Amino acid sequence: MRVTGPERARLSQRAAIASVVMALTLLIAKSWAAIATDSTAMLGSLADTGLDLIASIMTLVGVRIAALPADHDHRFGHGKAEALVALGQVVLITISALGIGWRAIDRLIHGAETANPEIGIGVSIFAIASTLLLLSYQRRVIARTGSVAIKTDNLHYSSDLYLNGAVIAALIIDHFLRVPGADAAFGVAIAGWLLWGAWQAAGDSVDQLMDAEWPVEKREAFLAACGDYPELKGIHDVRTRTSGVHDFIQFHVWVPEDWTVRQAHDKLDRVEEDLQRRFPGTEILLHLDPEGHTDREGMLPHHLTERR
Ligand SMILES: [Zn+2]
Ligand SMILES: [Zn+2]
Image (cartoon, rainbow, N blue to C red; front, side):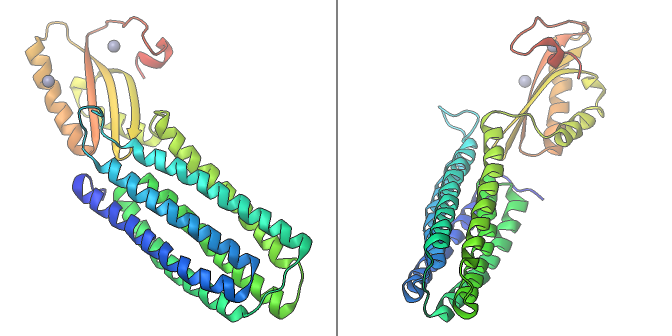
C-alpha cells in the first residue's frame, strides 16, 4: 500500500541516507583496492562509486525538497524536485558510462598489468553483497513511496552489480588466465548498459516535468470509477498530470440546467470527497457546465476536450 505525507518523507529520506552511507564505505574500500591492484577496471569502479556518492547526496536533497508542503510560491507542492534530481543523476550516470567506456577502449589498445587480484576480488564481493542489501531495501521503499529519485538510484545500483562482477571477471581473466583485452570487452558492454539505463530514466523524469498524461491504465481506472456516480455522467475535458507523489486530475461535468449552485456544489463535493478517498494523493479539480453546453475552444483543441 502506498503511503503519503510525513511517513513517505521519512521512508524516502532513510533510503537516501542508506545509499550515502554505503557509497562512502565502498569509496574507502575501493580506493584501497585500486591502489593495491593497480587495476584499471577497479579504478573505473572507484570512479563510479565517487559519482554514486554525489548522486546519493543529490537524491537526499531532492527527496527533502519534494517532501516540503505546498507554500506561498509553490501551491502545487514541490514534487517536481524529484524529477529534477533524477535528471541530474542521468547526467552523472552518462558521465560514468562514458568514463568506463573510454577506460575500456584505452585498456584494449594499450593493455595493463594488475597485482594483488585477491584484494580487488574481495572488495568487489563485499561491494556486491552490500549493494544487494541496499537494493532490496530500496525496492521495499519504492513500493511504498513510488519515489522517482530512489527508483533512478536503484536502477544505477543494479547496474553496479554488473560493474563489480566485471571487475572480478577482469581480474581473474587478466591475472590468472592471462587473456589480453577480455576485461576491456566487459568494460565496453557495461558502459553501453549504463547509457541505456540513463536514457530510460531520463524519459520518466522528462514525462513528469512535461506534465505528461497519466499512463493509460491509471487514467482508465479513474474514469471507470467515475462511472459509479450518476452525477458524473457528463464528464468531459479530462486532463491529468503528476508531480512527485501528487497526482492531479481536472475535468468538466455537465449538470442539469435547473440545479442551483448550492445543489450542484453539494452533490459534486460528496462525489469528489469519495473519489479522493479511493485515489489517495490525487487532487481533483472540476468545473461545471450546464447540460449540453459546448465550451469554446481554449488551450486544448476540441478533439481532445469534449466527451472522452
Ligand atoms: Zn465543458
Ligand atoms: Zn466548493
